[in-house]
Length: 73
Image (tube, rainbow, N blue to C red; front, top):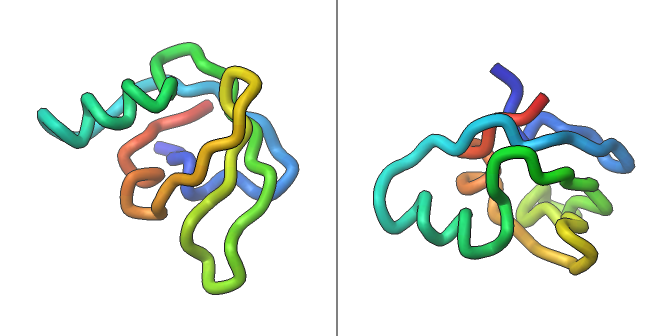
């Protein structure tokens, strides 16, 4: 299983499935990260957290812990 955390800078991935429960899953979905969404990894902060993404035409920062809950292909 490949997660969003494993995607390298400059690569694009498609959200396959969301893991997690309740409020965490709802928050991820509210940010626009739903099944089938294309995600481009722009950069990673110097200490590795957070990840900066381009999703649906806007910029989004996601913590590594949240990125581990997003399965991609």
